[in-house]
Length: 587
Image (tube, rainbow, N blue to C red):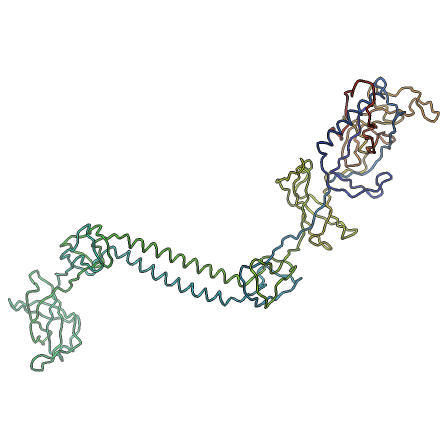
């Protein structure tokens, strides 16, 4: 004989109205835990003992006599069965935010109250920012100074490339590669010898009517050769010569035919007006190029006699001091920029806005009060929906999926069931006492009457069957067999050797061969909950199943149809082997 199965304690039964347990009021279900190691040992011992005792009541493998045992019988009935998982949890808001600040100053405005609905970005608090604005202004000044310093250092870096200040020919180079030069040292002399300039005086009144670009003629004193020239400059001041003659200086540029030099002199005429005296030639451009920064001559880009243009690089200097100064100025500038950015960010902290859309749950600070760093100013809840988290056993987690509907009830709201939906099944489990559970998140959109913090019960329906044959879960034995009374219609389906026989154990003076006898019938099961199991084949209406309900009492342990007392039955030399009852479908 086999033991009846244990109920699935992690699953709850959702029964139709009018179908409670026989003679019992269903109790609220709680999340179950798998039996510990000690429980499993006790269960194994009880099952083994039950097998030994059961063998005493099997006669030739035929029938079971109930003379010494107390069985409970139940009719095979038609009912609805729902397989589900239940659990409890605490409701939480869809989102929540505790508004804090790092600044400490006087609150100027706080124009909201508890219970107010606010949008994301709504201004909650404004805090006195006078000191912050002063610091911001100081940071802006520091940034400007750093920018100017950095620009100067970049110019110094550019000045390491020594360039010509005029177009002409390199008359002389004052340095060689490897020379150390200081700011102001002569690098090169540039001359424009293709054009010569002659500065002579003209009567002041006549010179006043001259203009730049006017044609002039130049007569060499040595050869009386006449050259064409152009007025390039007229002095604005008047000089007084001997005899109180008033004159002005006029500069005339002459193309050098190749023989003019600064040692030659000449007179000039502009129109009909001649100069009052001769003058000597000078080069129209002769520039001395000097170093603007100190350094070492790394290379020379031109040689003496080369024709150069204005801005052309003549020499390249190197200087570690200049490079270090540029780097230091760059870092100082970046620090000033970061400091200013931080000041702007800090200024934003003085205007505190709502980070989410929601409801003000509490307001801890009001206008006129001084804020404290890291203290909660107010709390906002997004109550557009509520959530809860269930811890589901590892044996059941594979049955849970996102999108499953959940029935929610709360003790605080009587006679109302809310609908939720599974939104997340976490794969991060938590192990405790040898059992692993996984958090399952449930969302509840209809929240009328519910509030964050309430304790609720949740039921997730896994499977259901309506109008099916069912037996008590305890009546199913290992190997999917059931004991039925010998007079049950399905007793004829018992396996060979299991047919009832004649025994003088009839009760109440009966002499029918079936009285007080049971046979084992093979069945096929379907949906189950913690109390009932669907039978899809093997039984029919009118059958009566027999089983011994699980119970415990002082000094004994009754399980699966066997009463196990404190002392083992004698005889047999020990506990025999044999089959073991279990959960539907086997342990």
